[in-house]
Length: 199
Image (tube, rainbow, N blue to C red):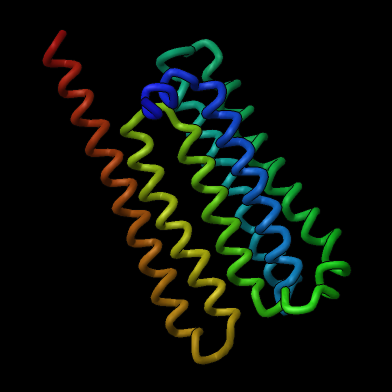
């Protein structure tokens, strides 16, 4: 019953997913601001803004190139701009609240958990946004890859004993990313073959 309602009420589902993305972004901002080396983490986060813009733009274009080919490029531009704006807003919030957050007792010790929790909530929101089942499978693998990569970076900043483990965790994330891309490509080729067969 819940699954039927969930699939039938796409607007409500996407409103919930957008809310989760905003909550996740707020948690990421708090985690960055509370980290011992806030400026280094802010710079690392800023480095992902351009790839995020390009990735979201390509995703938006691919998502609408069949259903709305005339405006697929505009959809891609809008998707990329939205993701970039949210990431810039998260970064700006982190830098703005940094003096206040640094005064909160105990938060500096829990910054990594807050940061990773925000990443997880944000990707759950992005995962719920997608309607297509095949793309949801891809986004699940993509979410795992990004979590591993970000987790590896966090471990590298957590102290010398964790630096080597963090490198292996990030490497595993890049491996999962390659698996996600290859899985999506195979699924796309299979769908194209099925479509050609039924023509």
